[in-house]
Length: 268
Image 1: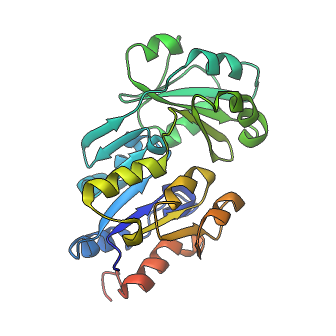
Image 2 (image 1 turned 90 degrees about the vertical axis):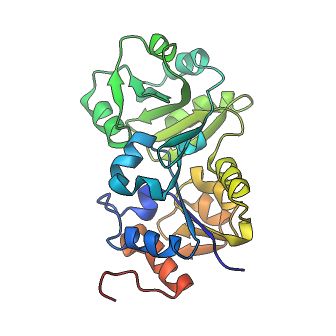
């Protein structure tokens, strides 16, 4: 059975360590779409940050953003699932000195911290991001679909244990060395990808997926060709059937060239 759907994470997967797209990626998208292959970008990043990365090619992609909480087909929003509670997780995080929560909404992301490091890291992944005096007031004026927690030290050691108490009524996922995300139950990249497959009548057997961190785990369950990057977290490697070269070794593109028997460079 041929591959009809390619889903890829961004940071640590498609992008190299300097946050650059592979030079032949957009050309590959155009060539493969002409063959009937669809592309999904699945990231913990904000949608508005993703469209900055892909600029004029936005309409070529389906975007699973905020780890599945907010989904766009090109420029059209097709899903936004609100977090079931905000006050209790925010209160619990006050006990973690290294943690700063961001409320991620359909319109913008919001934070309350004067720390330049927090702002710098937030704006790396959130194009629309603003300081507010009152997080809960900001939440009343937007549709909050994720609480992203930035930890200046170690998210797995500091924030994740504190948020585990909410796992019975929220989805909690480690999305980076210094990031933990809290969303509505059942929200993840995998459930979002399954909806895309259903919409496009594409099976898991016709899907290839790439990732590097535990927030990609559920996505791999919906792809027969599941690839963990060589630089991936051990938990993701356990979940995947295959390993791709690292993001700094052009891993995604090397696999695609092999699978499709194509050279996507401008002058092959």
